[in-house]
Image (cartoon, rainbow over all chains, first blue to last red; front, top):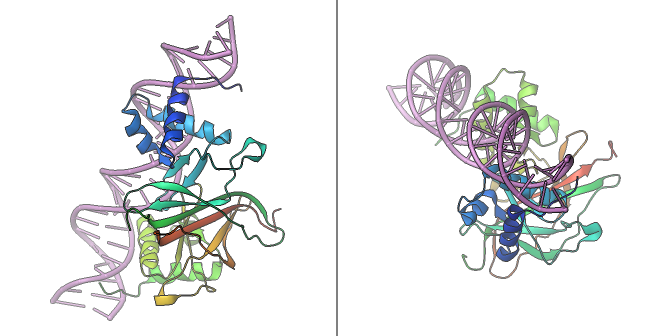
Length: 126
Length: 126
DNA sequence: TTAAGTGCAAAATCTTTGCAAATGT
DNA sequence: ACATTTGCAAAGATTTTGCACTTAA
């Protein structure tokens, strides 16, 4: 399945890149001011995720946040997820924490994916 | 608001305790074989969570998993969450990993909650 | 041209809520 | 007795899907 360069994808990727934080569908939609369909946004985001272009973090609220993270290593052209994300309970901002972490895994266990979200108050809100 | 000892709560707590892993609403419901209402299960689980009796972990799928974790420290009678959970992509089991972890947080940030889920294959399925 | 992407509407999934009836203390 | 809990049904919220139309290559 060959990917095409569409306006929708370009717009969403630009927003993610310039934002620097992890955005939910809702946040993206308000940035886009309803110039794009709900379903398209979801489809583009999932495409980005499948292609390893962005992270997906799922919050305690069950909501998906997507982030283009410039600081990430990308072995095999995939984002890796060996770091935490932080969600501010006041301003709602979701960001990548840069510290790489060591994921502990018992013998015989195989890691496929990692979702680590810390909730609290960021330095601007605490 | 004083809590009462009801059958529903006792049943659910028993299942959680004897299971040893983190259960979703769906898993609980099938254990209960429809002898309890959907809403009641959710309400009991949230009550347990509010009271610090159980963990809540939210999966990459956005689904809530609840666990009674005997090995947990419980300062202030609250479960603490300084460990990861592991979800097997094959058998679906969700368990607490016992390794305590250090949560890295930049200066000025305040931790409130932590949700860490590793996905992969467990030792029985890998 | 033609497969990939989009818009629209509808469905699917998980979770919460309002209210009357039942239950624990 | 009376506040808490339950069952039922309905609503909410987020995400996915089917299908016809559009668009990039």
